[in-house]
Image (cartoon, rainbow, N blue to C red; front, side):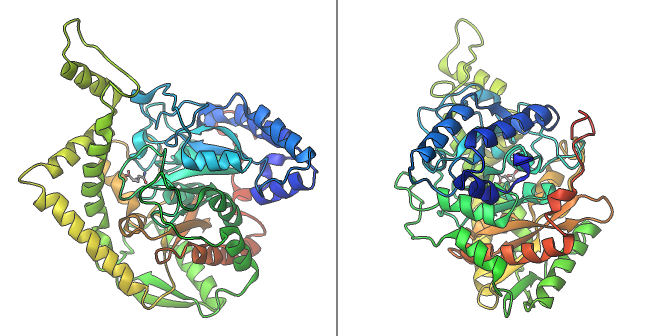
Length: 507
Ligand code: GLN
């Protein structure tokens, strides 16, 4: 088999099951790819030094005739927000540099149990705060489509790793769009499951009422396969739903071959302004809608008048919850400790540690959140934001009374240049205008590549949203559109990504 890194996870799993390739070969191919391109991409914060041993063990078990899961032997990249016992977990922060967790996040434990081979930990904005991965304490990740541009955030590392063929699969987390927005900017697929559908046990908390863990892949089927591994009830996460979920891989397969688009009612939000969206993003979105319509879907205008307040509400609720979640980084229990002078009090040590350990964006949000929660301001800020959240949830309820899914562009622009927005928090926050409502309402969302923007040749994604618990619908619809688009393109969009030659001379 020529280049194992170009295969989808499904195709690689198939070849592994048939004994055509070994997991050691597949894992070595990805480690070689990382060695060749990650100096330029910087998708990884840490590369596992025992991935090949894990792969060899899977090969041995397969040879011994053991019944293995569908993804056994396939390599996996893990966002550094997820704790792991065998690799450091930093959440992109200096304060957790070198931190070793005594336990695995549930999604990591389930991935290991399913025979996936962890390749390493991926770069991210510090504590998952950001839309470009430039807020990582360890330097930015570069977009494989153009190394001078951002891969999105906060999960830019996972998206770039998958887009650069350094890993066929990755895990991400999505609090306001950190799986879906990087997917849009890198031509990959990202899914934010229904709130409570995937365990967050061992996901370093950003905003607990919004956080979800989910798959980052190159195809809808691959996302379904990984979702099947990580999803389902976990008694260690008090928000975990007890539902028995259908197979999302099966949903993707049925979407790709069936006629799910016939009679499907696709809602388009009237109030989402056309202005603010880059021309190529709007054009690609309209072309996808036309394709859906040509294949039997009905495009229905819906009203969601409160969506536009989502960003404002989110940037009060998130800092409020984050300021509380990050209080545990107190120099006593985790990570870094700075003792400013010989007679330091415990308060001096905490203050100096947090001053040295947190970056600017994290400090900005802790201050904002503490302020929004303080006596006298609580009702005006946090209370009002929670009311807006309820109104957005009602918008969704009303819309899903008439449509099966809602479609939006996954983000307003294509990948912007490194440095372009990093000093302008508001511009950065506005990136999340279409992804945030799903987190506020707890509904599932998927972003799949919809094409390239004409003006800059960079990837664009389309997002579908479904009612709570209807994740399978997203896999059916996503796979159906993906099949139509790939027919038209003559293959996956990522096949058209330029080779990585800009800086390192590697293809
Ligand atoms: N960009 C959003 C933020 O900065 C999303 C973060 C996320 O989903 N983790 O908060």
